[in-house]
Image (cartoon, rainbow, N blue to C red; front, side, top):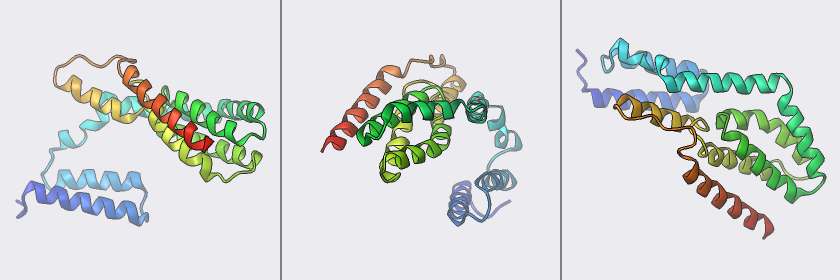
Length: 201
């Protein structure tokens, strides 16, 4: 038996995990597996509870969304979108700002928003260079647009999928694909208008 109670053990493991994330000497995925193993070795979680996430519908769905995103990148489909954006934007910096928000936001509704940010970062750098502006002026809008776009559908963000999984586990009906869309649209439109007003000033 461990001399510490479960709460203390969990807090120590969380602190250790955060330290490892900040230290960055070990890959994040390896650190996460170490944290999972520690929770099982200390008896906080049973082995069944510790590996339950690998069989969770949300985890599997997120995995396939990342695979789909990688496939779009490898096949060059994303580059076609980037070329189309540059062609449409031209040298107009404000149009670049609007295009990044709209395109990335809408795509994030159907692909994992984290993957969308990773995929579109090289495109945003190209757009920034083409329009003669600092990439930072487009990278932050890209990040926030992906977050807001992820609220438009059930699969847009990992958070929605995890919550849906918890709902199902407690015996309730799962969320529909577009059940969160009305609320997501309000958030996305508010974000979009706020960004446009900021860009005009």
